Length: 252
Ligand code: PEP
Figure 1 (tube, rainbow, N blue to C red):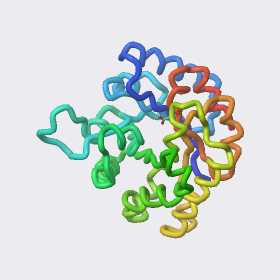
Figure 2: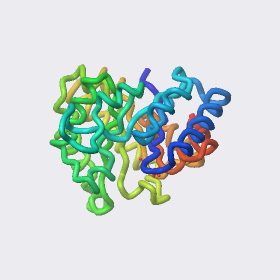
Figure 3: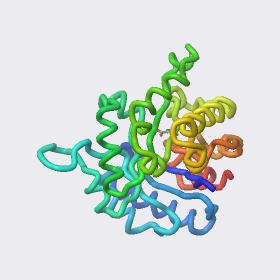
């Protein structure tokens, strides 16, 4: 059985104090009322990681970063390495989010370095892929996503690729309030699972958790999560409010 995962992407939101308050709220809600079969992950700003790791119940909530450096260490002012993330007690790193690809020029080449360092440090990458609106309108989304995967995580040996969580996030659905339809999300996640099966075998494909992300909320999550290939969600806006996030966690 593959893991069902609901991961919050806090983005560049919350001061440390606000982030602690939010994590405390989420921790209380999840430990008291959360579905125990769901792996819950809070991906916080780097500055919050140590505190959030300390305060959550590690048996119920994993903690992750939203990025890491493409280099292991050294003269890279302002960067935070995968080893540094690991040293906080965090277990996950979001990589390849469309905002990082678009605003910070993250290419497949850069992402390959980040994925390798993340895995080498025993962290689980939550690897994002997804197309822009024009690509969807041109009905080229499958080719687009395939290329994003072929150039990056599909280059890994099977034992490494099987450690990765994949998140399909159509860019046109991120933060827009426009969710992909259940059919569009299921179709793409089944397509990605098929690609994994072709390249790495059915057993690996069946074990890989593939998430949907993009304006997912407590209202649309039950229908999305009921689909056979949707193993949970990567949640932006709705992860900033404890009750909303709990509603998504309990959507199965
Ligand atoms: C995201 O940024 O990963 C995301 C899914 O955002 P939102 O849920 O706000 O669309």
